[in-house]
Length: 101
Image (cartoon, rainbow, N blue to C red; front, side, top):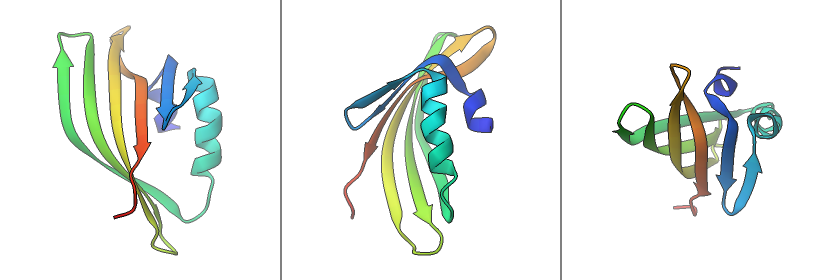
Protein backbone atom coordinates (compact mmCIF):
# COMPACT_ATOMS: atom_id res chain seq x y z
CA UNK A 1 0.00 0.00 0.00
CA UNK A 2 1.41 3.38 -1.04
CA UNK A 3 0.44 5.02 2.27
CA UNK A 4 2.41 2.48 4.28
CA UNK A 5 5.61 3.09 2.29
CA UNK A 6 5.81 6.74 3.41
CA UNK A 7 5.39 6.00 7.14
CA UNK A 8 8.43 5.85 9.39
CA UNK A 9 8.55 2.55 11.36
CA UNK A 10 8.65 4.59 14.62
CA UNK A 11 5.89 6.98 13.55
CA UNK A 12 3.43 8.53 16.01
CA UNK A 13 -0.14 9.21 14.84
CA UNK A 14 -1.93 11.77 17.03
CA UNK A 15 -5.69 12.08 16.41
CA UNK A 16 -7.61 14.52 18.61
CA UNK A 17 -5.75 13.54 21.77
CA UNK A 18 -5.27 9.83 21.11
CA UNK A 19 -1.80 8.60 20.17
CA UNK A 20 -0.97 5.46 18.19
CA UNK A 21 2.67 4.39 18.14
CA UNK A 22 4.45 2.58 15.31
CA UNK A 23 3.73 1.98 11.65
CA UNK A 24 2.22 -1.49 12.20
CA UNK A 25 -0.36 -0.26 14.71
CA UNK A 26 -1.16 2.77 12.55
CA UNK A 27 -1.60 0.57 9.47
CA UNK A 28 -3.99 -1.81 11.27
CA UNK A 29 -6.36 1.12 11.81
CA UNK A 30 -5.73 2.58 8.36
CA UNK A 31 -6.50 -0.71 6.58
CA UNK A 32 -9.85 -0.95 8.40
CA UNK A 33 -10.70 2.67 7.51
CA UNK A 34 -9.63 2.35 3.86
CA UNK A 35 -11.81 -0.78 3.46
CA UNK A 36 -15.07 1.09 4.14
CA UNK A 37 -16.99 1.33 0.83
CA UNK A 38 -17.86 4.65 -0.85
CA UNK A 39 -15.30 6.75 1.03
CA UNK A 40 -12.45 8.56 -0.73
CA UNK A 41 -9.66 10.73 0.64
CA UNK A 42 -8.56 13.98 -0.96
CA UNK A 43 -5.92 16.39 0.29
CA UNK A 44 -4.24 19.70 -0.42
CA UNK A 45 -0.79 20.63 0.84
CA UNK A 46 -1.12 24.13 2.27
CA UNK A 47 2.54 24.64 3.14
CA UNK A 48 5.85 22.80 3.27
CA UNK A 49 8.93 23.80 5.22
CA UNK A 50 12.25 21.96 5.08
CA UNK A 51 14.81 22.29 7.87
CA UNK A 52 18.21 21.50 6.41
CA UNK A 53 18.32 18.14 4.68
CA UNK A 54 16.96 15.97 7.48
CA UNK A 55 13.51 17.20 8.57
CA UNK A 56 10.49 19.19 7.52
CA UNK A 57 6.85 19.97 8.17
CA UNK A 58 3.84 19.89 5.87
CA UNK A 59 0.46 21.43 6.69
CA UNK A 60 -2.35 19.61 4.92
CA UNK A 61 -6.11 19.95 4.56
CA UNK A 62 -7.68 16.53 4.03
CA UNK A 63 -11.23 15.45 3.25
CA UNK A 64 -12.87 12.07 3.78
CA UNK A 65 -15.81 12.09 1.35
CA UNK A 66 -18.60 9.54 1.07
CA UNK A 67 -19.34 9.43 -2.66
CA UNK A 68 -22.86 8.03 -2.11
CA UNK A 69 -24.18 10.24 0.71
CA UNK A 70 -22.08 13.34 -0.02
CA UNK A 71 -20.78 13.55 3.56
CA UNK A 72 -17.48 15.45 3.64
CA UNK A 73 -15.38 15.33 6.82
CA UNK A 74 -12.57 17.88 6.88
CA UNK A 75 -9.32 17.30 8.74
CA UNK A 76 -6.48 19.66 9.61
CA UNK A 77 -3.17 17.78 9.49
CA UNK A 78 0.40 18.67 10.40
CA UNK A 79 2.98 16.13 9.27
CA UNK A 80 6.52 15.98 10.60
CA UNK A 81 8.89 14.46 8.06
CA UNK A 82 12.37 12.99 8.54
CA UNK A 83 14.97 11.89 6.04
CA UNK A 84 16.54 8.55 6.91
CA UNK A 85 18.60 6.22 4.73
CA UNK A 86 18.20 8.58 1.78
CA UNK A 87 14.39 8.81 1.79
CA UNK A 88 11.71 10.98 3.35
CA UNK A 89 9.17 9.41 5.71
CA UNK A 90 6.38 10.70 7.95
CA UNK A 91 7.53 10.63 11.59
CA UNK A 92 4.42 12.20 13.13
CA UNK A 93 0.90 13.01 11.98
CA UNK A 94 -1.10 15.42 14.10
CA UNK A 95 -4.72 15.16 12.90
CA UNK A 96 -7.77 17.16 13.98
CA UNK A 97 -11.36 16.61 12.78
CA UNK A 98 -12.75 20.04 11.93
CA UNK A 99 -16.29 20.96 13.01
CA UNK A 100 -18.93 20.91 10.25
CA UNK A 101 -19.16 24.18 8.33
